[in-house]
Amino acid sequence: MNILRWVVALAGILAAAIAIVGLPLDDPLGPATAGPSELATEQEGRWDAEDWNVFQSTVRWAQVARIDTLSFGDAVAAVGRRFVGTAYVPGTLEVEGSERVVVNFRGLDCVTFVENAITLARFVRTDGARQLSDRPGAEDRYESMLADLRYRSGRLDGYGSRLHYFSEWISDNVRRGNLVDLAPTLGAVPDPEPIDFMSTHPDAYRQLADPATLERIRATEARLNEAGRRYVPEERIAAVADRIRDGDVIAATSTVEGLDVAHTGLALWIDGALHLLHAPLVGEAVEISELPLAERILRIESQDGIMVARPQEQG
Image 1 (spheres, rainbow, N blue to C red):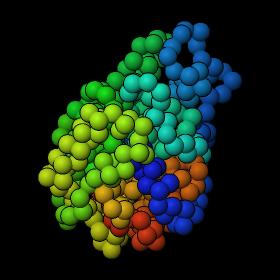
Image 2 (cartoon, rainbow, N blue to C red):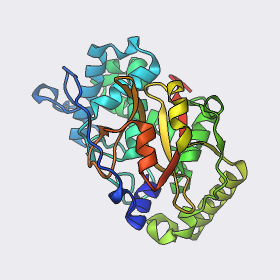
Image 3 (cartoon, rainbow, N blue to C red):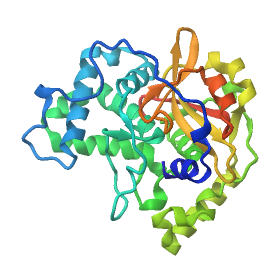
C-alpha cells in the first residue's frame, strides 16, 4: 500500500528495526513458482505470462494439498506460506493511466501479500481450479474477487475508491462480511490519533495532483476520524495472543503522525509461539518473522500495537 511504503521512505524508521529472518518451511510441493510443465497456456490473457504461471501453479498446488479440507484461516495461512521467498516490491499498484485492478504475483508488498493470500484461498475453495482451462475467465473472476477486498464496497471507482488506509480496509471488509473484527475479543482500546497522512503529504502521491481526488481523500480521512478505530496496545499482545489463529490478518499500528497502520501480515503459530507471516521491506522477501509477534512489535519504534481481523470464506 502506497501509504505504508511512503512512510518507510519518509521516516526511515523500519530500516533501523530488527532484521527479520524467515523460519525454514517443510513444503514438499515447493514455493509459488511455475515449473517447466506449467507454462502459460496458448490462450491469450491480460496478465503477464509469469503472473499467470505462478497463479495456475499455486491453484494446482492448493488442489493437490487439499486446502479445501482446512479451516479457512488455515487455508489462507497455507497459501501465504507458499509465497515465502517472493520478492518484496513496492509500488506495484501505482501503474500509469487510470486506476485498475493490478495483479502481480512476482513482487508483493505487505498489503498485496495479504490480499492475494486471502483471494487465492477463496478462489481455490470455490472450485477455481476448474476455470484454469479458460484463462480469460479465470483472470476476470480472480480480479473481481481481489477488487472485492481492495476497493470500498468492493467497487473500483477511481483512485479514491481504493482502501488506502488499512484501518478502513479492515472496517469496510468487516461491514461486508469478508472479515470479522477481533477488537472486542481482544479487548482493544480506542486509538485517538487522527488520520491525515495522505492529505498532508500530497506530493508523495501522483494522483493527488488532481484537486478533486485530493478532496475525496480528505473526505475519507474525515469520515474515518469520526468513526474511530480500536487497537491492542503492544504491551497487551502477549496476553491475548492465544485468541489469535493462523491466517488472521495482523495490522501493526503506527506511531507516525497521521498514519493508522505501519505494516500488515498474517498470523502464524510456530512451535507454540505466534509469529508474523509477511512481506517486509527490511527482509526484502515474504518471510516468517524470527521473533514472536509480541516481541517484534515491542522492538520496533514505529509500531505500538495491532489490529486483528479474521478472514471469512465468503462475504
